[in-house]
Image 1 (tube, one colour):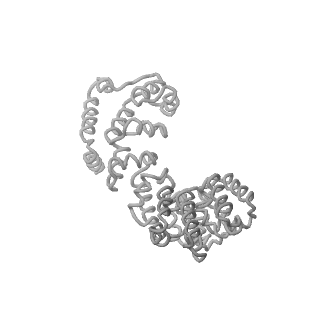
Image 2 (spheres, helix red, strand yellow):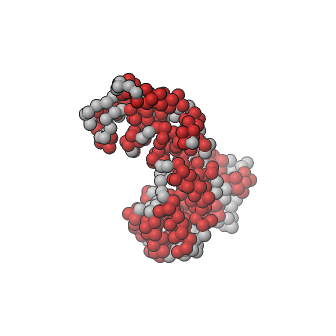
Image 3 (tube, rainbow, N blue to C red):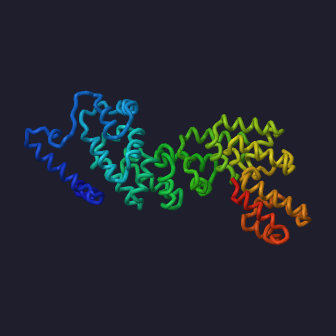
Length: 389
């Protein structure tokens, strides 16, 4: 039965001729005294360093790289398995750079058996609906897939993530784009983290899923790391029942303690108290993820140009999330131009204007004045319009 399944996998992958060749060769050499390696051109060497030369000549590594990556391959005395692996990956659409990247992350990939270890993984990904280029992207992001068992590991991970994200399309999207997406253990990491958030933090799984659709790494980290993030969010005074709690965890996950402290110091230089900083984080936690330079520029613009106080910014910290160059500055220039012409009363507050979609902003504040104030369109043409970040 297993042989039939393998034969089916190999046939779908176009590898049956290679498999049959290996099988016939094995049968032949069982009854022959001829050296099998010599017959198929495989290099056998007693020199443990011969893989350095192989990695240089067959894979394109530099001599120094080859010396480094050959160390885990010291037990190899033949190029038979490496040759088969490299040939297989080339047949699956990997170029030389892709093959080198896979090998550099884990040189022992060259030690596996193609028909037993590699072909089933590629078939699994193909059965999910991934194209050849998609599979290459997925492997380059998650090369450890090549070491996992399809039924004992890959299928449970697929089912787990599909239930969390709500669709296979999202699973495949992250598989192609998210580093180490399938790395974490379902039993040792994913389940314990979800249980901790649900049972100890009181966060419904549906609320967690909303964040995971964009940032699955939140529950892929070690349980003790997630617990440490919860402790940091608690220190900020973020209520666990708040819908912003999980987003705060995600923001803290992406900001090291060092970067976090640097932002505290920056905002302190503008006069924020610790309580104002904590309040600002609770209302718009993702502002923590921007660079120090961008955060400084935004705060300076709102204080020095728009005229807001530090307390006002702390209370409406969502203002810091808008794109400075393509949203805040051009819209401020438009409103100032309208005020100078007597066309904008004090009823339209700037925070409200910033929150409008591009279409609504144009409809309300630009197009009605297109004939009388053509400069408005010039401002937007020069600066551009985009959603803020």
